[in-house]
Length: 413
Ligand code: CTP
Image 1 (cartoon, protein in one colour):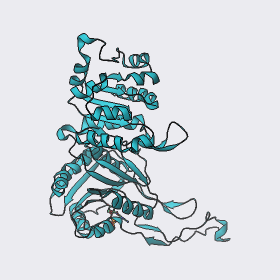
Image 2 (cartoon, rainbow, N blue to C red):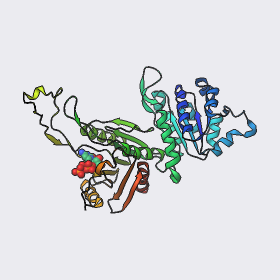
Image 3 (cartoon, rainbow, N blue to C red):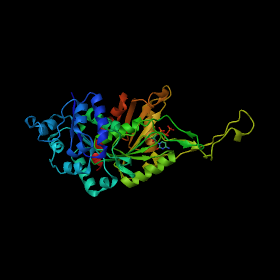
Image 4 (cartoon, helix red, strand yellow):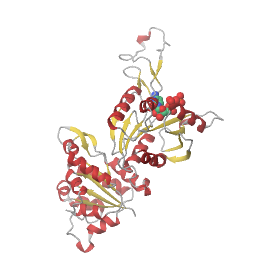
């Protein structure tokens, strides 16, 4: 049975770890909760022992005959700490073993995932950021906190991500990362995901079928491999993954501006344009709602909808990069090949046209890909190498993409 140590430290978000524990247990994991003394001031020992069905070790001095500070770490397949306070991050970064949880960390050789939660000022303080960088450089996956309402009336980055999303990251690490470890530690990634909405009037827009699942899978796979990931999110059905910085964009033009701003600000190593950006938008956005009454007396009157082309963001990013090799730019291609037409030929032509370094192509005919968990992709690069992945989980496709990119990223640095 897969063993997880769930470390809970003393923040107000400790109550959310109850839900996280339930999700981990429901998926069949053997979970041992290790709360710190201050976590117990928020959620008491009986809650943890009742929910895990076993005694809860709260300090190094209980059950000493079982040497829990060594045994727990040695036997864990994953150590997950949520919420992680600034104090915990500091102790973990410096190898201070002042309680059972930090002892467990020093004995564990399995993956470690940490979900910090604290006030924005504490999160952004250079001391905390330095501790986070130290932990990341050692292969710990530190999830970026979410942005939102904090304990008081204020809001900002520092919220614990949703328990479901933290659990998803834990499952991603246990399932997907395999022997790759955190091979993207120190790598900055920007991923666009989802579709765009092109406004027509105050109530209507033109959109497409993109759910955001594939873009989010690319982001999730990068997060669990240790990258710092920003997602530029259009219109999506899928939940935004934990651990990413998030920038929202509605229309193709919003996404264009967001991509240029994020790329200029972060100077990422890799940009992945997984979003299904609209190619056409209503030429003019009407004010108010276009009513039937406004079209005159004819009962069958319909409004005209002249369209205009949007700007190709991918091509612009490539042009802006100019002759530099940095960042590596990856495009996606949603194709509907006609009978007799080859997906590979279309993908190669699109890669040449766009000038990007890699292209992930998929045939999207008859709703086979949009909104689904599986996909069939062809990954091609500028030098003609290609890899076909028929009928794979979107996470598997994402990991295959990172497997292809990782050596190029490291050669580029
Ligand atoms: N793309 C973009 N900006 C646009 C349209 C598309 O950056 N205005 C990006 C997509 O994010 C994707 C790639 O271009 O990475 C290919 O998108 P796709 O829609 O398959 O190709 P198009 O260039 O739009 O060509 P067509 O639809 O004519 O096949």
